[in-house]
Amino acid sequence: MTRRIGAVLFLVFLSVCLPVAPASAATATVTIGSSLSPRSLTVAPGTTVTWRNADSDRHRVRTTSAPVELDSNDLEPGESWSFTFRTVGTYRYVDHRDEDDSAYWGTVTVSSGTSSPPPGGGTGGGTGGGTGGTGGTPAPPSSGTVTMAGRAFSPSSVRVAAGGTITFSNDDDRAHTVTASDGSFDSGVLNAGGRWSRRFAAAGTFRYFCAIHTDMTGTVVVPTASGSVPAPAPAAPRPPTGAGSGGSGAGGAGGAGPALPPSRPGSARVTVVDFAFAPARLSVHAGDTVSWVNTGAAPHTVTPSGGAPFGTSMLAAGATYRTVVRRTGTFSYVCAFHPQMTGTLQVLPASAALPPASGAAPAPALPRVAQSAAAPSPSVLAPSAGAPSGAPAGSAASPSLRRVASPTMWESPLVAWTLWAGVGLAAFISIAWWRGREPV
Image (tube, rainbow, N blue to C red):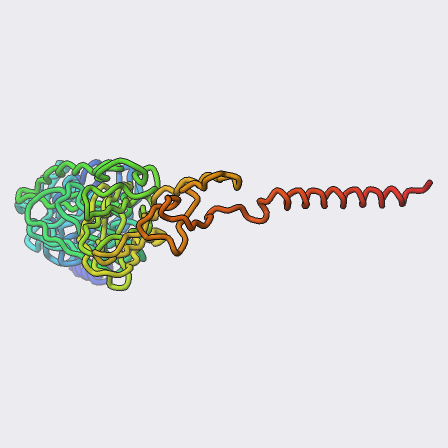
């Protein structure tokens, strides 16, 4: 009897004093390779899920919709990241570096009424099948933001639900655009600090770029209701360099030459090339139509100063900006993208005479006429002040004439011979003086 009492007391002592071994914590593992495996998990609160990068590329786990935001930061090949889920809810996440690929969309559902998965596995098994009807496709958000900085769109690919809105914010120190590759939308020029939003009403894959810095590209992915991603629309053809010139001549894609001839009376054209306006100065009448034609490969602008009544924010390659000028005055303008490109437009009254075009070829040199000519040539003669206004120069009706291209003093033969004689005499005297210094 005494032995039994002692055994009972010993067992009570052990149960009170010795620590009780805790139950093993529930864990699950998601392998990141060519896809997420499994893509869907349902776990109990307190479960630790580990994402292991078994791929040769870098990946990043980041939630798009969740009670608690998760972000693994970059996982290099072979690295792992773990998180213990304690808050009940549905955690939808993507691989931030492949978020436009549905193979990298995952879901973790934390339910208090769910038994814990076996260690190292998940309820979805290794095939990506899931529970709860999610199908492993996270619902896209209803809005998103893309920033422009360092000549890049960040993130370069963003998902949004049909009907959702993406806001583009220019956090750079230079101007950018958001221009659809298929031509379906264009933000225009967004200066530093500018913002622009677009609503994507239908599913699709929308690729875009910056028209000023064409190496800047991005994608907006709008999945269908079933989670599929439509293929992007074909890119719109861009006009080749030199298109839209409306004629031939200098000032095309080959360089900044004189302006092309106007297509009709009362119109004028400025050719925009990389990187100049040709002609740099143009004079027109009030009421004339002026066109700026971009024959270069880069986009440009016609940005006036001083409140000029014309201008365009961006002139894409091959595009034409046309306006009718009505206010007289002299207006300067520049390309906002390339400030070294400057131009001037002079608008004169309709009755005023236009000065010669600045891009016109120089007049040929006048032939020189000998002084002994019997009759002066009309090309080198001009009527004097007393000549009749309607009489041509050199005609019998204008006997009083003055020579325009008479030779100057330095062109006189007498002066030339005198100078050469003086040089020879000075040389003779110098040689004689030097010889006189030699010893006999």
